[in-house]
Length: 355
Image 1 (tube, rainbow, N blue to C red):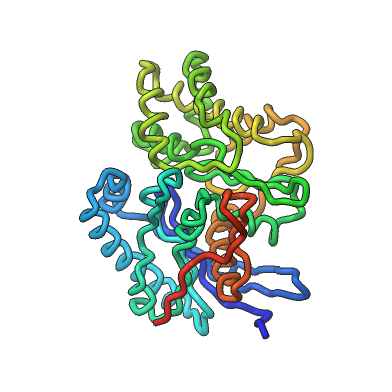
Image 2: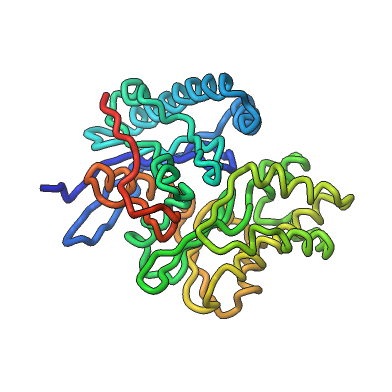
């Protein structure tokens, strides 16, 4: 018999490199309906040294990738152990960890999330469920996005669930199937240019608001092949590095204008990605705090009702959903949808490591 209550930790590190998100979650299952409570939650920022290493890792040799995987697993274990100790968390069913994506090349049958080495379980003295993407890629899928099954189970009241993180992705139900895909880069680009001005990020989009749109740059961005592809499709930092940055850098315009133009681009692509332009749009991720971006999305989608939840859900939704994926894996239930990733079949993905 399965349990009806799970006490777990969700751990997530996203491509925007703002740190490691940790959320202590209680899940409750009753007659197939799931509910949750986010208890303690925290984001632990990376040191400048780690941000630099994680940014450069996309170009690492196999040997350097092995080394960073070892080092990152130790770092992650320390962060998780400190969080458990500080918050006096006891009797965890599992720690459910995404790790940090370094390489994502599903077209080459390859994805790498570091921090998922088996020794993490012994380092933190907890059962660990992790490495959720690899099996899907092995089954011919994109290995992403994985959050949509959580949207379906926990947030089915909304027509669309949009995440604005390092990239934007959306999920929704269509003809009885959950559909989801990455739309465009978001904070991977916005933060990069905010950093050039000495900011960690563009607070509420104020800097973008002060700029002007470059129509030539906007047209070139909107014409990219990726946007013409049908789903399933996903993006990795390689896309930003090899395609977006070279295009944006060609234009000798102020950084404010680059931010303004790219914000316009994000909102435009989101509006094009939604099959119906009505209903409710549930927005989470760091971009939900970018007032200027939210205004632009509303302008492109005047008949959509935008719903922005409480701060804990905005900031820790991905940690929450990876915690759920871990629980579903413990129950050997489907936690990855083929309709989303393009894999051969629905499956229960992830590795379980005992301490």
